[in-house]
Amino acid sequence: MSMTCTLMIAGLIAAGGPEQPAGPSDRIVQYLGFTTQEQEELRRGKIVSHDVKELSDKELAITMAVLVPAPLTELLDFVRSGKLLEMDRDILAHGTLAVGATGEVDAAAFQDIGFTPSEAGEIRALLEIEPGTKLNLSQPEEQRFADLRRIFQAKACEKDPSCADAVATVLRSELRERLDAYRERGLSGIAPYARAGGKQANPAEELRNATNAAQFVARDYPAIFDAFLNYPNGDQSGMESQLLWLKQTVQNRPTFILAHRVLWVRDGMALAAERQFYVGHSYNSLQILCGFIPTQGQTLVVYLNRTSTDQVAGFMSGTRHDMGRRMMEKGVREQFEDVLGSLAGRRGR
Image (cartoon, rainbow, N blue to C red):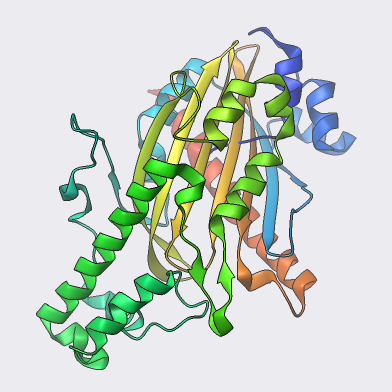
């Protein structure tokens, strides 16, 4: 389960200290806008969702909350264990991009990135790439595949091991370059995606706007806000940080994602975040914020997901947004249910 939340944190911080009211504080649920009925469902252990104001016509945003019957320490142990990645039904493979003694990420960390024979269509899509929304690449990245196309025949590429290997090599190189740029310059290092007609999609701007929307964190926890917004600058000392590559099924197609996961624990609560700063197709960027608040031996978890995608903008935007939110909520709810079930199983052993 990708975890991070924002809207609740104002109430969390205001409550202060590890001892919280028996139920979610009025300040938290009022800030989030949960109705009286939703608050009661939350107290009964239901997974509750609520609308969030979206920042643009390309953004899908949802917030969800649940009272987890486990103490904060147990939940944080579970989050740190890596079980969330193993449980995610859509993640086909993943790797941790650990930084070595030289300060560089080992090139071997990318060696498992590639496509299976059944995913040959993705190899052809990369070799035939043109500016548009089918794949997310910058203009220079697209040009590298165009150069390969002059050497290999796209339609026969999957039958030619040298062609398939060349495509995978370029892909690994481009992912490595995007990772290095993010590690060096943070959001400013994220290259835009080329779109038809000379247009661009700007994931850096989308992620910056998503972070800036959490102004209550900037007000009450300015060091946390600065460290995340301005990564790698700012005081990073209190942040548990992990960089990952993910191979994930999105809209029934595999894609590769670069993600940055962070966790802060202080003042008797925790705040986690995930920033997907590169996504191969279907959506441009994703940022999740999640707060964990202890409450009488249980933990209130509040989750906020902001996903930006060109697919919901333009004609029939309202209908597309409604459908997109429903699909997003369904997926997140399933992840919450899986985590709750796993925690219950662990506690029952």
